[in-house]
Amino acid sequence: MKKLISSPESVVVDALRGMAAAHPELSVDLERRIVYRARPKEHGTVALVSGGGSGHEPLHAGFVGFGMLDAACAGAVFTSPTPDQVLDATRAVDRGAGVLHIVKNYTGDVLSFELAAELAAEARIDVRTVVVADDVAVTDSLYTAGRRGTGTTVLLERIVGAAAEQGFDLDEVHALAERVAAAGRSMGIALSGATVPAAGRPTFTLGDDEIEWGVGSHGEPGRERQPMAAAPELAARLVQPLIDDGLGTGDAIVMLSGLGATPLIELYGMLAAVTPLLEQHGVRPVRVLVGDYITSLDMAGCLLTVLPVDDELLSYWDSPVDTPALRWGRS
Amino acid sequence: MTLAVAATNDWLRRFAQSVVDNEQLLTDLDAAIGDADHGSNLRRGTLAVVEQLETEPASTIGGALRAAGMTLISTVGGASGVLYGTFLLRMATSVADRATATAPEVIAALRAGLEGVRTRGHAELGDKTMVDVLAPAIDALDAAVASGASLADAASTAAIAAQAARDATTGLVARRGRASYLGDRSVGHVDPGAASTALLFAALAGALAETTAVDA
Image (tube, rainbow over all chains, first blue to last red; front, side, top):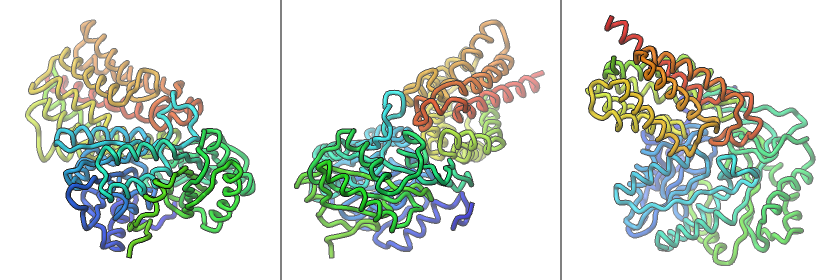
């Protein structure tokens, strides 16, 4: 293992210290591993809390700021945050209008946020939860922990964050979140495994001629090991499962995220291969993100997320946002 | 014989020690079908429990278990932190303020813990989780006590049953947690949560055997 770290034990806190140094607009609680906005929202607005295992940067802390999250809880690498951590964040950001928990569907995350929401209810804080489960790679939800939460989380945090900023109440914010969660679809491929610092070696290994089709963001296996292929063929393998899963048509927000070790030149090349395939199926990318938005440490590969949108969703998307990883429309 | 506060603390300490000793094994098992963090996460949590036992010793079994459960919940992370924490918290509620617990009281507490894990984790027997060790180990303890064994001997029987149950998870298909995504590919691997749960029962047997030796 060769990594730019001090020690496997300190990797999360070191990264949070770096975030604090780079972003004075954030307030970082190193002790509790929670990232807040330095300037909290106005009283009477709904707050958004998310969190998850570290190693998916910029998710989630990179999306704390105006128009997105109010707080992000950082767990250990690939490990959900703890319930008391989520509770602390929830208490801190509540402005009397309630808090939306945005949870990716992984057993640990769901259990932690569930327990935190129960404790918050005892503390008389109104909490609603949206669980994102958009990974179409998982076909057998009955005999598994269900579809995993991946790229739609980023798009949801942006869209719902905009609505919260505009003064929607908790029920409205929650309903919007459920709508986005239901519409978004994701599919990823890995060209290599990821190395968790504490483990020191990759969680899985692939031959030069192999890919993991439908990989999970912690290296969980996907649908199958497949032979490596050129970008247009890989693009088809990403797009087809989304279509087969009933992806809506029309205008869409498309995100092609790198998994951490794939250069931008390859991501743009993949996008060029993905776009015509989507258009053939009647999906028109009207907004596109390309880059590292939800990663898996040093895994090579990409994750394609498509969210069909109407003018209303698009107007939230386009409204001002000001976070470390997503920023537009605000001077 | 009974379970005393000192033995409860000893149980938790022994569990921490065996987690530390087996950290690499737990991590390796998790790397095979999960995400390679079970060993390091549980190590962090159980060492925090040990530190707490030293700084804020509890005067009741319930107090010790409750404090340990809360510490695991706040330090381990992931599903295992919540599940181990829930297990100990439910045990704590069951034994309450006792300074010693009889064998039936210990069994009732363990069963309450198991029920908590089942409910919180939505896991049933055969799903390839810690439940697959908890349930048969508690059954073995219960049966041994019913047939007249001392609590220490019954715990040692339970520890052996736990090891066998741990090994038997090799043949199961994971249906809960991260390993479930492997489907049939999860067969052939021991479940990491089952492995750490077997350590929990070995630690209980060790703590009670020590008590017996001291009593004698």
